[in-house]
Length: 594
Image (cartoon, rainbow, N blue to C red; front, side):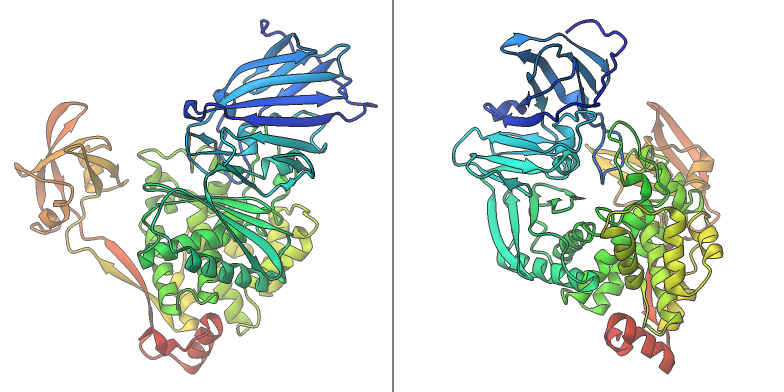
């Protein structure tokens, strides 16, 4: 490696496209090191630029994948080539008078998530953005990838197509497709099944309490329900990659596959199993919404920096709404369970103080610096575009349905977006999205958007639920208001969150303080609620804490009880119109709620 100097300019005009081939080996998987070899044949430029992406589509945070790269080297005819590092993720190799180039490097892979890489003695998993260089100017060039497993019995599962007559070799049509096609390599369980005449695969790594035949049957129902909505499946083959371990939850969508992570013992309990199926429904729905129907700014990915859009609320929030709806339509759970799940989401939203501070469009735009970088004040200053986007999507669905007697719905918005933007992958602008929603609704939504997407007004749930014979019922806590959340950590009671404007904040209590006692008596995190029931609003209690290792006792004047639970219930005497609207929305009589 030479000292970094000003980068040399490369030109790509009138050049023959090179052949690009990657080899990924893992000879010592217990070291967590992937050994990657890039071979270029027919490269004619005097300079080779290599850039490692800093983020991966679908996960909106600059993750700096280059931090895991080590042992970079470049050769031609076994002779070292001069190179320099230009920036955090940019390498430049001198390639004068050479056409066959070999670049070798290693990637440390010990983060088990859907967006990164993980390698150990049981398996190897990698995402293209976190492993492969982008060659500027040649992003549209086909790429071959050969995987060298450490043991011959290890399987290789990916959405990429195999290259005929080349062992363990796969072809990607371009760099975007390579980034969009993770690999699972190891002794995972692999199941094949067919839906609507198309092949599907389910690869499961890790032990768990799942019943695979039931799981596959329910996944089939989800696929069929979503295919009915959009009029078919826009792929030839689809792969589900599922990792099971400890306490885990997450997913990442791709065009022809998805990666899922779930807790290994969360597949027998009915509620937890239904949450898993909602995760499946969410990531599968993304193969339309976001992978093909996507904002203009994401039409062409910039892998070197943030790609800003105010529309992530539609990409993720609307998808979150449908991950509750789809299992209902698939017959996995009933309308009562659907409304219970929806109530839980509304409860999360209504008990997040940040909803009054951050607008939905701002939450979308600032995903890169806020949503994935939570701190002790995030609950006070932020609202998730997943969560509020889901709530706004609910209101839009109810609005459209009530105006059109259930003959139009948010489904029609999705289908129009699919035909207008998704099929040909033409990115949409925020204005175009609003125009499609307005077209389906038959209503100017400028005021709606200003209030609930670009503003922070409270969402009027009851106004939109009432035409369907439903109401949102709030239940207050039994104890007076204190305003903290406390967790037990290694025998210490640590205050994790202090609500803005709460009695605790006004008294000077901070996140990170250790809670010791109230009125001189020691207490645990689990006992806090019960202890507060001994007091009344406006009572002043003496709270003893460790603040930055300093023992303090602070007077706290308690407030009136706050609403802690929200539940969707039927109105007392629903009208015929309300009953008809409810049945048109959820497919069963309102009386089924009991």
